[in-house]
Image (tube, rainbow, N blue to C red):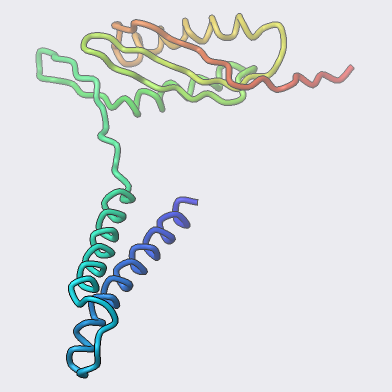
Length: 171
């Protein structure tokens, strides 16, 4: 879908640039041929310049900006250690295999000065165990961050159950 959006944006930009070139070319062409210009010459030039400015504004506002990657930085004896928050999120996402009730897990890592907040969106299988799964997952995330990555400054681990799938058990 992103490719289609980019393609349409390029087409709109090309159309606007071509339209401005066409409007700007009218006074030049008519001046060379000696024909009279409908309307004011300066009006045509102003309109063409306005369309060109609109094309440039469109290009600037519709370009995709890359998110600046965030890192967790720890000062160690040998020098600073930087861990990408996306790498931490990917690492935590692998915990979902330990929980059969978890259908999909999307962790997000937010950093502040000295602390880390983890927000996890879950899709789970229905049943009375949802509360226990969420508590176990919170505990497991804290353990994994501490033992696997050495991150002990975890302020909160927020679990958001976004969707519950019916638990189909056959009798």
